[in-house]
Image (cartoon, rainbow, N blue to C red; front, top):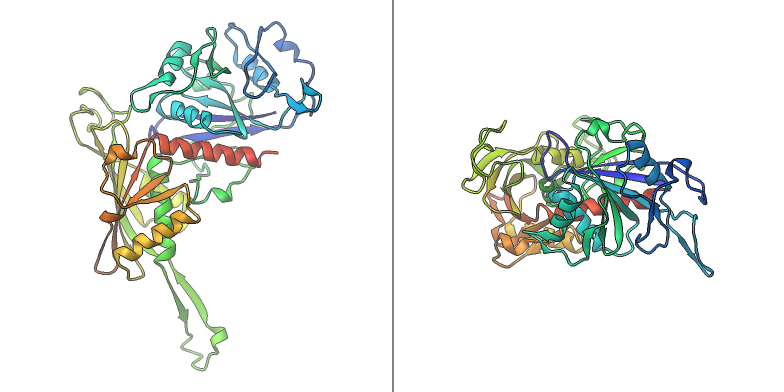
Length: 421
């Protein structure tokens, strides 16, 4: 049985960032008798594509009981003779820690996909079942969820008959990390952006990060600029004037020399609705009434997924009075001389090939609301691409900082699940 933990409520991080925690352990291929600690719980059914049941009742579970129940969950395996209960299906089990904007978007994104290689079985959220159920069903940005969502007792919710256990524990130290052999660490967590470096994912890594929404927008088209607008030159030795062509050293120069970015970002739950205290004095001001300059680590974080760009990027954020969709304004100096049409052509080529589903190019004069619920990480606004003096490139890219980002989190969870054995 595998267990994969996704947390959306990390302290001291951007609200849109998310880290994924997982523990992979092997169990017997058959599991016909429940553990003694599970006996006495009332069973329920309703797992997607399965007649198996997970023993939970209305009783509030302790951390140990919760882990035991997660470990016990099995899915039935279809056969010519019907279903054989107690035979495990190789499917990663996922729990969501924090059911806020990204947590709920993640669940909606996952629910909309068929044949997912993982299964969401639990949510840790302090709001409880009633709040989780209502806010999942009714969303001011996404609209009404096209699914049958309702509480299932006082310890679970049902989504189209799929039962998801709800636990409420505000203190991270009381969550079952130790029992799951997880050690939380604040730095040196491997970071992946799907479409950029996720193909280098190592299944042996116990904790991984999907970076932030802005990093996921920025990294794909920064990668294109760096790869397509570099230069290659032969290095000749002054001490060997008669050097043979085969002895020449071919040097490849990075496309991006340096750059800055500004993300005009929709306000988030970390800001104040009305003026109130906040560690960031600017975020202390009313979010719906102000343009709020603040910091962002997104530009520097690009170096976590594209190491050759370390030290070449920096940037700021401007929080604005919109609930969703943001836009990145990137200005970089590149090595190779170019022009706007060539830059857009490079983006189109990548969007149709290696970055299909991650990057798009838009030729229409659209505004932020038109990019709501966009599945891609970034959409280049081609009419706003500029090149000054042959080597200074300005690129504007739109992104849905909730929905688009959550799609990438689901993608990364898919990668983890497909690499789990």
